[in-house]
Amino acid sequence: MKCDILIVGAGPAGLSAALYGARANKSVIVLDGLFGGGEAGKIAKLHNYPGVKDTDGFSLLYSMQSQAKAAGAVFVNAYAKKIDCASRTVYTDKETYEAGSVIFATGCASQKLGIDGEKALVGYGISYCATCDGALFRSRPVALVGTGKKADSDVAYLAGIASKVYYITDSDYSGENVEVVRGKIAALEGKPLSKVILGDGRELEVPALFVNIGYLPITSLIDKQVTTDEKGYVITDENMMTSVDGVYAVGDVRKKTLRQIVTACADGAIAAEHAARRKK
Image 1: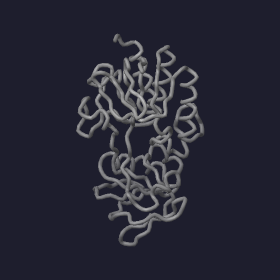
Image 2 (image 1 turned 90 degrees about the vertical axis):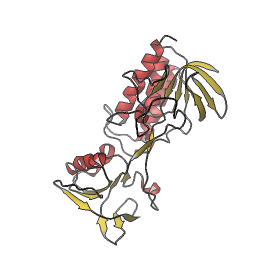
Image 3 (image 1 turned 45 degrees about the horizontal axis):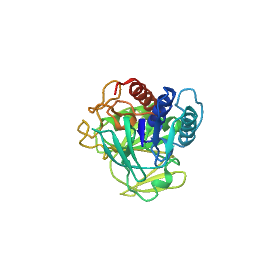
């Protein structure tokens, strides 16, 4: 099957691209796989998307999908199995697609602690995004586990919101309203979360634990076909074009400084608009 624009991924970046591509009167197909299964769909309470006072990630994505469908985008419940970037051919478990442009919007996955009960507490005290969920715990004590510049930055951000931040890290850090805690997390207690228990038996009574131990871009389908940085994030130009003509990367999967729903949507709009105007 042929189409003008083929979008791999149905997070906020892919859905925004679908809307803009369809509104440009292009034939748009979105491979949505497990709709709402990405990082954005896990957000239990979303308060920082402009113009939307109070929602959750899945509801916002559903609204975006409905809007893109109304504009003419076609959604296919299929997973991409292989992508040939040079020919812009996408193979799925059901059909093969030849596209004028391919927009890659698979996002990235936060690395997990691997502790019992962690998955069940996502949205109930466990968060992988301080910027997204920090304000939900204003004036309350919280904990963050991580290391490196991004974790340090998130701790500083939380310190301006929470009554106290327990920073579980091996980094040297000092900051107002922050207590550095050495050790490893052994267990989580309560649902919603009420305690973080360390390996030596110490207990941190907090309603929230922010996990910042890194993210991994989901790029296996285009690995070694497009240029990436040392961490695997796809490098694009200002139009979201990768090093391969007609192949774009948008949202969390590309190299950027801020990974938020609002920036993902902007990426998708830019890519689709450029793809719609690109001379084949």
